[in-house]
Image (cartoon, rainbow, N blue to C red; front, top):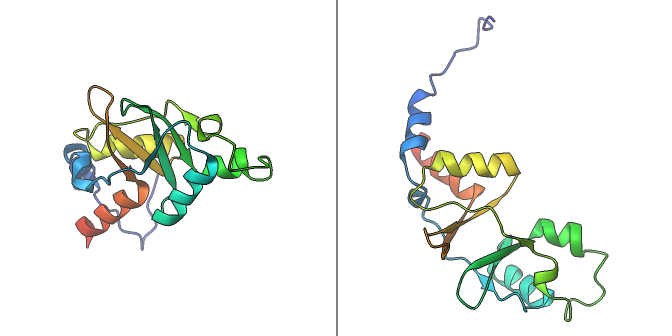
Length: 149
């Protein structure tokens, strides 16, 4: 396979190595906005709007992550289908048992998950499954902009 004459190949090895060695904590994970499974859709959507975020995490009474409710869930499961947002429970429309990562894992791992599943948000849990934070694809992009500038 040949390279066009005017195109320069860029060695991405240092970037790949940095993403493999830098933990997710370097992305400054956010404190997630959470709701209980018994919260209404109206409550969850209001929190998302007030906080200008694309998802809320659903946690049980012990603080364990049981689901995620995202903008995608709103569009595919709620919009045009739920008559009363004040009575419908978020637990009925969330994505249960979401894919997670741990904060000490490399950024490359988070990128792989986000890419493979076409997610925009990734919850972070500790070794006991307790919620620790959340990152977004935008957090990764912002981090890379800072490193590549």
